[in-house]
Image (cartoon, rainbow, N blue to C red):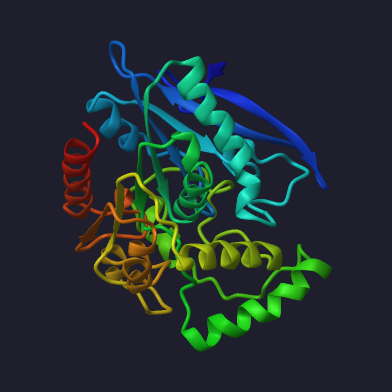
Length: 314
């Protein structure tokens, strides 16, 4: 246990994981305790091209009596080692071991009897699949999903052939980069050195984003198809997303008022497949990460989140 890069009161511990084809693998569990003694905890999992830096999100949960934890998954952020390909995976299930260990630490070592899993974008897909796979262990008491990555943001006639094309290629050349034109509009809307208000490490969260590789895309589509078939989670699930997607390829101030990464209609379509105890929240003016939206959108999302926590987890 050591002081985190965010400084006090954040601490971190490294989770050692089995080596893979690129060598050493770790994940990083960041924590901050609520005042006094709490038996409730929240575990936050970031999205693609991301890591945990949103201290105001931790403030929100701490103010409601939750001990706060955040997991930088293998090959992301604090856990990215110099010999590794950033954000690479062959399966969403590759992340289950660090989620298992984080939950063990939170529940068994540190004595929490309630665990809410909060996740953004790709983290929402990963944690939903993990919660379903671990349903018989009663690890997760609720899922708070911020713009979960439940479908590819492309027309249907492009999504279907793309899956077929990358399937066999992922076996032969898993690290091959898919040539995509990434305008970086979302990153531009976030970082304070561009048109945003937030400060974070652009080596861990590049404005344009890390390259997309074929094995990663296959893993994403495999996970999404599993969600589309239905997970039937028994715990309360909150899904939040913007009311609009940003569809332009060039910069506009409108990028501050919509999801510039995912098609929000896809999120609304597939959210009911997660489980029957679903609460869906649409946020006017919300960005892809609703907690990084401009006010009043992010305030509204936090208000809705507070209402959900109070109603479903107390």
